[in-house]
Image: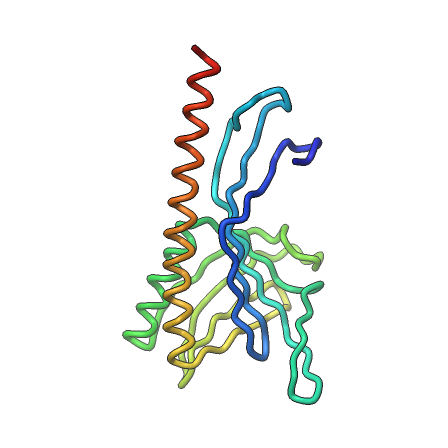
Length: 178
């Protein structure tokens, strides 16, 4: 736990999809305290990092530029909305879904908002635009279905663990105040 902000992250799940680029999802429960003396957390929330790193090709093999990856901070509601938009895209081959986040989570110094969008043109695209930086992850039909399943699993598990942390934390708060 950092002394400066009294916050800690507990990892819930992590999943990576690798192709020419790497798309990774990292789910955490972020717990905050008002002081180090407290034996419970004053605030619990879910934080999900959605990361897209460009691939660097070398003889048909890829490594990934994680130092310059685009990172979007979401929560489980955002991720679940993305899941439903992906289902819509799969069924209808079109979706007008866009998700906007603030720019503060990237090694890049640009000040533009990040925009996540979906598209279909014989394959499925997940696009992230960040100012002049545009990156995509391309799915075939079966990988896209797997991605949708993974989004649901990560959302369900994150919400379940957050709920359990909140119940345990509420119990600690009640025992301190009695």
